[in-house]
Image (tube, chains in turn red, yellow):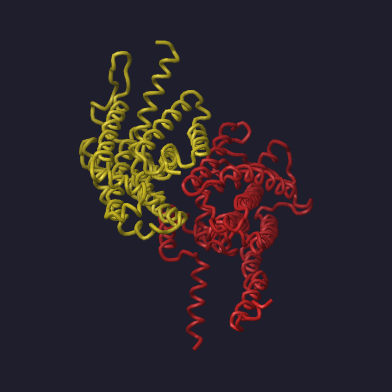
Length: 341
Length: 290
């Protein structure tokens, strides 16, 4: 081709750099091992805080599912707790009413049910944007909560389903008082889900989602099936949120209707924003920092904790729009720039 | 009177009073969202602030209920203008998400501040004699507080309608909601207009907050609990439409009251079901621009 011969060497070099970037960006970096090593180290350092540790891992998974739709696809939702709740109640009702107490198959069931609801609601709702979408997602979560309250004979209402019992993991590992088995269980589940999410994010499908977030009109113009892609990612994220909810029920051995609360949707969003959206590890750092701070500060004074979270959000929006990880990146760039001549 | 007619009249009366509360509190949110497309989740916090100003004035300073309402609206309106000038205006061009986060942060801070000063226990407010008891309308009696609410709502609707449709400033607001760029290019200062409507809207929200104490009691979670209702009214009515907000407040107020009378267990379900149905059919609300 004549055209390719006339391209200047600089442009060729730029193309090669771009190709190299595209080929290398999905490779594992050594930094990526850090959060996992910390999670494993926590198991040995805080053996008596493993119940709390499992909760952190559950919230990391929940935030990760939100990151898929909010951070990558740019869907702003105020009702993501709906799917967390569906997963939590699939396992809870299964154990309390049907005697389905095998935990791992429970996770799969929760994922399927949540994904199904995610597909059905997403199919209808994702045609809308802005305030309408915010209200519709919010209303979905509240309607599920009201439906649960209406059938409190089944769901246990706001008193919930306490004292659920599950079979030992794989038939071997007994649940212990400190929740150590649970922690490992949650960590393994999170690792599997994370690997899956990571594959999605770096796939062409993930690229298309980023395209939709950045410029939806252009994606329409180049013929990308925008609605189908959005429904697909919404379904996947709903399934993952369902797994997180199921883990929540299994590790706590209880569930109440408060899982559907607006607070729960807002909380997970705050965690994700705090860590940084549209970056896989934002969910990790955001959920961990939030949960640890909450654990310490809300014991001191819940009022000041709530004020602090509000202030943190305002400051994050005004000064650190890319979250804690964004701040870290900026700081490291600042120092590497200085060190070079 | 036959039984069902008694129930129907009760539903209509209580629903109307509820609708007036919804309208008074939400109308400012609708206009500011229509003007700037700003998603303001701190609107409920302004309503709550108004409620607490009324509580303080009536209980600690012995001011009458009605004057307290007026003072609360003025104070909160003025304070909200300061917030608008310093914080909100930085985010006019930002995404929905950033606006949601900033204002939810403000709402959390407001709730924490209210809890710190007033505690989490619901507050009540001393009413003057003429607002207590019942009022006789010939065929039956009604609680006079709700009758007062309906009358006040009707007066405010008339005033707002006049201001919106018959004054210069109302015409400017309508022009800016319709097409902000065009309005700016013919010399309307939309920025200043926004500050004004924001202050008036927050003042009305504060008035609504003061009126709500007697209906629902007032505790710090008011800021988020009822925010959902205000947002629903705005979304169902259509952004920036006075007519739409009124219609949405009436539909939702009466449906919700009817639901709570007829099916107490499923009470909360109705308002959301109506919202979802309306928004699926008309995504921009009753009178919103598609």
